[in-house]
Image (cartoon, rainbow, N blue to C red; front, top):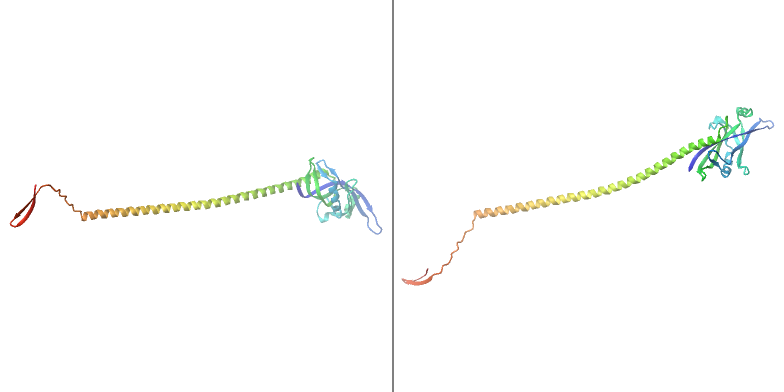
Amino acid sequence: MKLFNEKLNYTVPISVTEAIQENEKPRLFIEGIAINETVTRNKRKYLGEELEKAAHTLIGKPLLKDHENKVDNIVGIVREGSYNTERKNIPFRAEIMDEHTKEMVKDGRLKNVSIGALAEEVEEDAEGNFIVKGIEFVELSLCAIPGDSDATILRTLAEKFDIQKSNEEIKMETEEVKELKEKVAKFEDLAKKTEELLSKVTKLIEQNEEDKKEKEESDKEEEEESEEESDKEEEEEKVSPKSEVPQVQEKEGKLITERVNGKLTIWREY
């Protein structure tokens, strides 16, 4: 699981040393162990190899009051920070420059510091522990009341898990939107093809209707022409009826030839 800008607070006690140089004001230093290789009660696991890589990032970081990132809250600076390979921890040395803060440290009102860091990622191992990786120290703070370091870490990690959850939800929403867009694109393509098919079908139907209409008109014209011709023939028959030629049935008889007054007369006698 990837986490970004993870803020860690780890509260530890300090020891105080005062360095006095000739002709200079006394310099006040605090020393302690910033963090150890450990697994906390809330299963946050700090590996020595990660602490070793992060140790140098503590040097030169501001010493703040109560982790408040304001200019007026800068009371000193971290002078030293290194990794102890034998004890697998990070000892530090910081200088307090604010006079009021010096007095509070000297008289025991301030006895603890808490580190502030960023973690690039937190990975869960097979045992269910959350390994903090990519640690970078950003500040060291003086704290009035020593808090439960595990609870503080849990709180800050929980905030980050909320951010991670939000990022994962956004990612899921983004993937869902992408998938939805792909589906919409497919539906749009299908709709386009369906529209084209409907257009072709509509044209075919319109063409069929036109052909049917033309055929009906053609049949009607032929029928009208046929009726006109029939009417014309009837009119012609009324005006010029056909003559009936009587058929004469020839009868058999005796053919007689006779000359009367010098004329030859032929007739048939029945």
